[in-house]
Amino acid sequence: MKLRTFLPLLIFLHISITGYNQSLSTAIFEISDFKSGIISTLSFDDIIIELDEKGDIKSFNVTGGGNFDYWSDRNANEKFGKVKSIGNISIDYWSGFNETEKSGKVKSIGNIAIDYWSGFAEKEKLGKVKSIGNISIDYWSGFTENEKLGKVKSIGTISIDYWSGFTEKEK
Image (cartoon, helix red, strand yellow):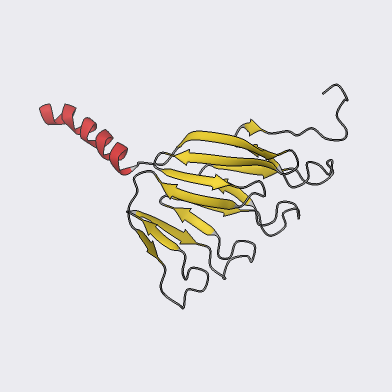
């Protein structure tokens, strides 16, 4: 009888512990200058990823620290010389077998997958970060004002807009 009431608790704890997933804990947006756009710093529990105003990964690190290990296999062209792990957090990169827009870019940090706009994406989005984990990133493209073209439009549910030549003078 005691086992019957204790068993669901054990199953729940097992799922909770083995199903650990990184989640966005902080997002900081910094205006780089009035022409370029914003720099975004996203923190996923113990991993920090910084995006520049062009939509590229500028830097990444872990809060827990640890030794840096680098890819030393010369046969791994896209990975050679890049960070392989920081402490117990592994880093992987897209290989040349993927679309060229992704080749050599960060594919994952720990269990956080990173994807890039590729294939038939509009040219203003090509090669830029499309998603980090479950956070999607979009850019101004298509028929929009030149001042906005290629800049970050949204990160997750946060929309970002810019003043342009088509805004009212009072603003």
